[in-house]
Length: 97
Image 1 (tube, helix red, strand yellow):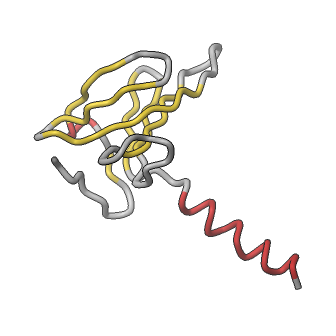
Image 2 (image 1 turned 90 degrees about the vertical axis):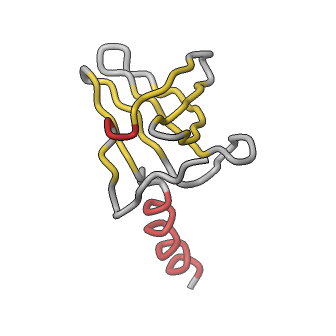
């Protein structure tokens, strides 16, 4: 019975990990998630993926301010990208501060 319960939990966890928006630039991508993860209050989780051959995944946080997604990543990189540069999935739209 425990196996069945575990199997039922994995699809839910996979759905929670799906991004709500993605922006691709030159093979790199930024995925925005609707969970807070380890980010400070009032921010959400972002993941920057660097294209091969580097194959890095860098975690970060974001907040939407006016028409920009303002991000900070654990490697110290900071930046802002216009909201319309992201493809918003699952019917999600950005929530601004």
